[in-house]
Length: 342
Ligand SMILES: [Zn+2]
Image 1: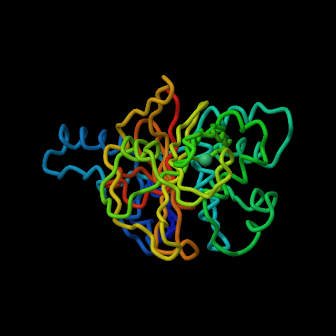
Image 2: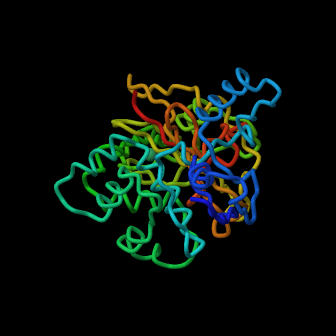
């Protein structure tokens, strides 16, 4: 090719794409660049390293090419994880939820190998086929009200609704909680067993720093519940309550109760050593798989993103944007925690 005009604004989407376009001309005179901004060019780290090696060897007068523009973010095309579109500007709760569910490889395998052709199976299949962009709308539509509405929803409720709908997934996530209520008057206890997909973790009001272990310890601590009717002595009295987790499976999904008061979110919570802690529940060991972050003050006017573990690094999934990122200090904005059995 002897002459070429190239437009380089926001159209560059892939590593090496600029090189391919520019290398079509065999003379600089035939090349016309429009909107050229070098910072838009994407290149693989391996390619930059090779050019730096060649420069050091053959052209020591030239500077090294910096490896990254932003030390926290690698080029998007290093990843094979598709993003999810957010065309109605509220789908982020569903997008972040699907990213964490699909990052649970055992759940993904169950879905792909399930005999029934479901919408979630199709979506899981597309997810593994390196499709660039997916949409959560078909799933929202299938679950129905309130997820078809153009209103922000709670990601934890969405996950529960989604799991309830797909029976093959029940066994990966289902756990039982054992609550023991003891009457202060007749001293008799009753045991309540409840089946759940998501474990609620409460944060004491004045607490700023927690760990997974401290939150779980708090959960199993004895608390006093005032004025409930005792089934043994039939009087209204105070009861002590203790809660323990029973029968866990492949994954543990935790929801941090950031709203002790409906209108006031706990925003300054720090969860320390979340990425390194190992939870042992009934001799099964669990480590962090992914989290969903809730950004903003209110439940309805907020934005959700997911951080998933991929190739032992952390990847932020923010609708269509999927990028390596540093783990946020103190697990800032973390709302839902997904742990995986080792
Ligand atoms: Zn009693």
